[in-house]
Image (cartoon, rainbow, N blue to C red):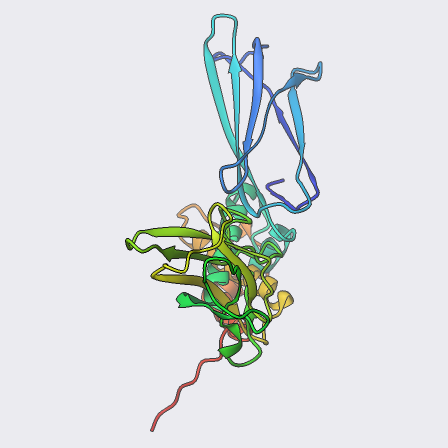
Length: 312
């Protein structure tokens, strides 16, 4: 299985063979796992289960990062010769591969593997999050009504100008991990980012924490946690907003539709592709290969910023 959710356990198994195909038992076998931000999660020894297989497991934390998790298994023999075996899996908000196979009609693993399908699904999910939210870049903060002052050398409580936006907008969870994080709470996959400029016009990162997605209230400080000095030449924030029409159900539906479209397009490009690999209903998709893309765009447009247009 190539897709997991938070709070699930990933189990890795491997048989190690020499160049002649014979099973061997190295002196050490280690399992190295990094999350989608490159953070080391575990670097542990793998043990043989007595049936020629080395295995280990890793429990994915409840508040996990989504995306690609990279694995590197390293085997070292008595002569200190090394062999490495890279692998990966994806962590998603939900199990989506079977939905994509069903929607695209491409059910055969031999046609497209779960690993390839998971990467297509993740790319589709990331693309949709870019399309349905609107980026607000390098904006100024505003004073919080409960605080008399902005960045005066002691105050850290300010507001992002989310209230000026129409249609019941709020700060978006752009990376889709279920939380709105600022830089300082995480250093990767953050939804709100920013910087401040000192009196010499040098730029510095800001910590942005305790974000209220409705009012925009947050705590902003220097990277070391101290207040931004009053001599600053500007403090800017970058964030994403979502509209009141946003729906998690439609977001998931759009992801499946876009990924299914990409799968069908990929399948149509294969010289070896035959209808025998597909379900009987799939010729309809081949006759109109953009059908899924059209359905995707209709679904996407229901949850993105409304577009106004017309002729005079």
